[in-house]
Length: 234
Image 1 (spheres, rainbow, N blue to C red):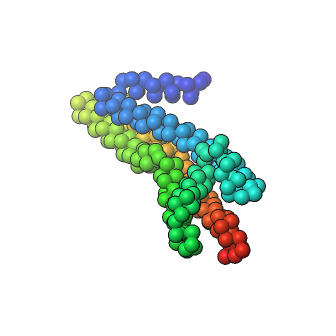
Image 2 (image 1 turned 180 degrees about the horizontal axis):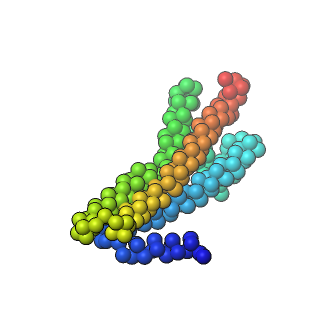
Image 3 (image 1 turned 90 degrees about the vertical axis):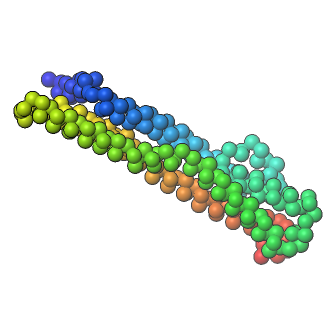
């Protein structure tokens, strides 16, 4: 006997025969689930691409003879957070250099100007990679309660059937209870992947943020060494 197949068939029949409120609840959960999985796959692709690009860029950075040489060879490798950080930092350096700013004569002020640009870029990159994560958090927080609403409604319907039929036997209440449990299961099935993915992706973004902060310090140190070589970066 294919018990599993029979159960799935019965569940499908219960969904088709459910009341309008239960169907609306299940439809809402279905929409949340579809968008949630779309966000999960998109963010996984986006962050893995960023991690690979950041790794490739760090290799280029370690092999470069100078920051200027890396700037010339970095045009084809810009779709990652470290490359964006380098681009903005070097752009700020060029603005100061071409403007013949007095900042070049004031070492602390110069380094502070570069550091401010890098910090702003890190914040922008983190905001970019955290995009759509609030939807996963919302899905994880809201959908169990939507499922719970369907559960409560199913139980109310079951008690209504008891009062209408004047009987409390299992046959009279089973459809309503089953309908309620389906809503609960659907709510959990929608929420759990969203919560797990949210925590996983957030951890990945935190690691990327840490890499950006470390690279920011390395970039400033390299720039400082090239501008004031006699001081050995001190």
